[in-house]
Length: 130
Image (cartoon, rainbow, N blue to C red; front, side, top):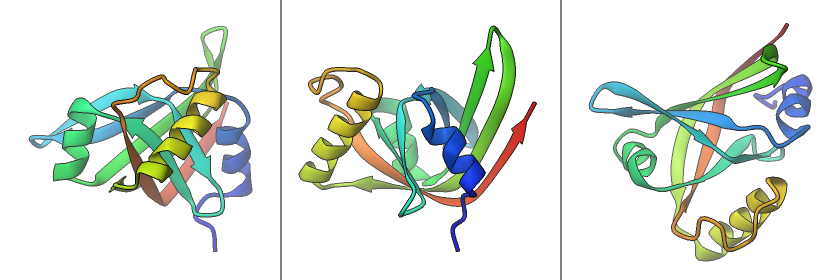
Protein backbone atom coordinates (compact mmCIF):
# COMPACT_ATOMS: atom_id res chain seq x y z
CA UNK A 1 0.00 0.00 0.00
CA UNK A 2 1.32 3.44 -0.92
CA UNK A 3 2.26 5.74 1.94
CA UNK A 4 1.43 8.86 -0.06
CA UNK A 5 -2.23 9.37 -0.95
CA UNK A 6 -3.38 10.17 -4.48
CA UNK A 7 -4.41 13.65 -3.28
CA UNK A 8 -0.91 14.37 -1.97
CA UNK A 9 0.66 13.03 -5.18
CA UNK A 10 -1.45 15.47 -7.21
CA UNK A 11 -0.46 18.36 -4.95
CA UNK A 12 3.31 17.75 -4.99
CA UNK A 13 3.55 16.91 -8.69
CA UNK A 14 1.15 19.49 -10.10
CA UNK A 15 3.66 22.34 -10.48
CA UNK A 16 7.30 23.13 -9.69
CA UNK A 17 7.14 24.38 -6.11
CA UNK A 18 10.02 24.81 -3.69
CA UNK A 19 10.29 22.34 -0.84
CA UNK A 20 12.01 22.86 2.49
CA UNK A 21 14.24 20.02 3.64
CA UNK A 22 14.75 19.68 7.38
CA UNK A 23 17.83 17.82 8.55
CA UNK A 24 19.53 17.64 11.93
CA UNK A 25 22.90 19.21 12.82
CA UNK A 26 24.35 18.73 16.31
CA UNK A 27 20.88 18.05 17.73
CA UNK A 28 19.38 21.17 16.16
CA UNK A 29 17.15 21.45 13.10
CA UNK A 30 18.57 22.80 9.86
CA UNK A 31 16.02 23.80 7.20
CA UNK A 32 16.86 24.81 3.65
CA UNK A 33 14.95 25.20 0.37
CA UNK A 34 15.43 22.54 -2.30
CA UNK A 35 14.14 21.58 -5.72
CA UNK A 36 12.67 18.08 -5.72
CA UNK A 37 11.10 15.35 -7.78
CA UNK A 38 8.58 12.84 -6.44
CA UNK A 39 8.69 9.27 -7.76
CA UNK A 40 5.19 7.92 -7.24
CA UNK A 41 6.11 4.32 -8.08
CA UNK A 42 8.78 4.15 -5.39
CA UNK A 43 7.26 6.54 -2.80
CA UNK A 44 10.52 8.51 -2.76
CA UNK A 45 11.43 12.14 -3.13
CA UNK A 46 14.68 12.93 -4.89
CA UNK A 47 16.67 16.06 -4.14
CA UNK A 48 20.09 17.21 -5.28
CA UNK A 49 22.18 18.80 -2.58
CA UNK A 50 25.63 19.52 -1.21
CA UNK A 51 27.20 21.27 1.77
CA UNK A 52 25.55 21.34 5.19
CA UNK A 53 22.40 19.44 4.12
CA UNK A 54 24.45 16.60 2.67
CA UNK A 55 26.72 16.43 5.73
CA UNK A 56 23.65 16.34 7.97
CA UNK A 57 22.11 13.46 5.99
CA UNK A 58 25.38 11.54 6.28
CA UNK A 59 25.32 11.83 10.07
CA UNK A 60 21.55 11.42 10.55
CA UNK A 61 19.34 10.19 7.69
CA UNK A 62 16.04 11.10 9.38
CA UNK A 63 14.57 14.08 7.53
CA UNK A 64 11.37 16.03 6.95
CA UNK A 65 10.19 17.73 3.79
CA UNK A 66 7.62 20.52 3.68
CA UNK A 67 5.94 21.77 0.50
CA UNK A 68 3.40 24.59 0.48
CA UNK A 69 1.35 26.31 -2.22
CA UNK A 70 0.72 30.03 -1.74
CA UNK A 71 -1.31 32.45 -3.87
CA UNK A 72 -0.76 36.16 -3.29
CA UNK A 73 0.80 35.42 0.09
CA UNK A 74 -2.03 33.17 1.31
CA UNK A 75 -1.49 29.46 1.90
CA UNK A 76 -3.69 27.15 -0.20
CA UNK A 77 -2.31 23.79 0.95
CA UNK A 78 0.66 22.19 2.65
CA UNK A 79 2.23 18.73 2.61
CA UNK A 80 4.64 17.37 5.20
CA UNK A 81 6.61 14.18 4.60
CA UNK A 82 8.81 12.39 7.12
CA UNK A 83 11.33 9.88 5.90
CA UNK A 84 14.77 8.40 5.72
CA UNK A 85 17.35 9.82 3.31
CA UNK A 86 19.89 7.78 1.38
CA UNK A 87 22.79 9.24 -0.58
CA UNK A 88 22.85 7.62 -4.01
CA UNK A 89 26.36 6.89 -5.21
CA UNK A 90 25.48 6.17 -8.82
CA UNK A 91 26.70 8.67 -11.42
CA UNK A 92 24.08 7.68 -14.02
CA UNK A 93 21.20 7.94 -11.53
CA UNK A 94 22.52 11.33 -10.40
CA UNK A 95 22.77 12.58 -13.99
CA UNK A 96 19.22 11.40 -14.73
CA UNK A 97 17.83 13.01 -11.57
CA UNK A 98 19.71 16.23 -12.36
CA UNK A 99 18.24 16.29 -15.86
CA UNK A 100 14.72 15.56 -14.60
CA UNK A 101 14.78 18.06 -11.72
CA UNK A 102 16.41 20.84 -13.75
CA UNK A 103 13.87 20.30 -16.53
CA UNK A 104 11.03 20.54 -14.00
CA UNK A 105 12.35 23.91 -12.75
CA UNK A 106 13.30 25.15 -16.24
CA UNK A 107 17.03 25.18 -15.53
CA UNK A 108 19.85 24.09 -17.80
CA UNK A 109 21.28 20.58 -17.45
CA UNK A 110 24.60 22.04 -16.35
CA UNK A 111 23.08 23.70 -13.28
CA UNK A 112 24.29 22.48 -9.87
CA UNK A 113 26.91 19.96 -11.10
CA UNK A 114 28.48 19.56 -7.65
CA UNK A 115 25.30 18.29 -6.01
CA UNK A 116 24.75 14.71 -4.95
CA UNK A 117 21.53 12.75 -5.31
CA UNK A 118 19.59 12.06 -2.12
CA UNK A 119 16.53 9.80 -2.13
CA UNK A 120 14.05 10.15 0.70
CA UNK A 121 11.96 7.07 1.43
CA UNK A 122 8.66 8.40 2.72
CA UNK A 123 7.49 6.98 6.04
CA UNK A 124 4.50 9.28 6.59
CA UNK A 125 2.84 12.04 4.60
CA UNK A 126 0.17 14.47 5.77
CA UNK A 127 -1.58 17.35 4.08
CA UNK A 128 -3.98 20.15 4.76
CA UNK A 129 -5.86 22.41 2.38
CA UNK A 130 -7.00 25.89 3.38
